[in-house]
Length: 85
Image 1 (cartoon, one colour):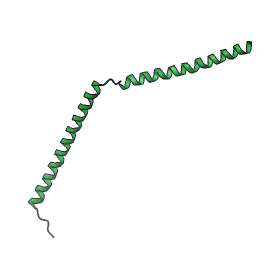
Image 2 (image 1 turned 90 degrees about the vertical axis):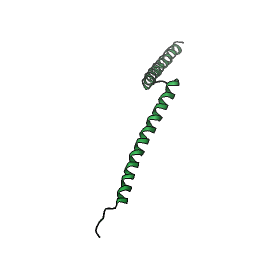
Image 3 (image 1 turned 45 degrees about the vertical axis):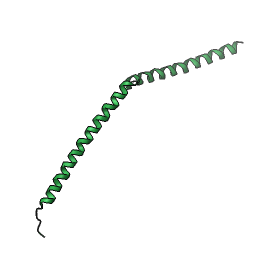
Image 4 (image 1 turned 90 degrees about the horizontal axis):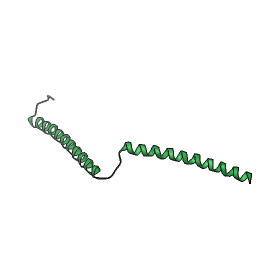
């Protein structure tokens, strides 16, 4: 069967191609709008940055380590006092 060129199918293909391009544009616009709104919302809230969070987390880990070390030292000193009594 010979293949014929149909202007209806050509126009339909062009329309679908254009629709896909428009959909991509709408998607990009929606993402940009959502990102802008989220940044605006976060800027009005009192939230910390990732760097600040990591710094405080590191400080807390160091404080826990020091607390454990001091607790062990106190236990050792109490044991010494108890053995002398």
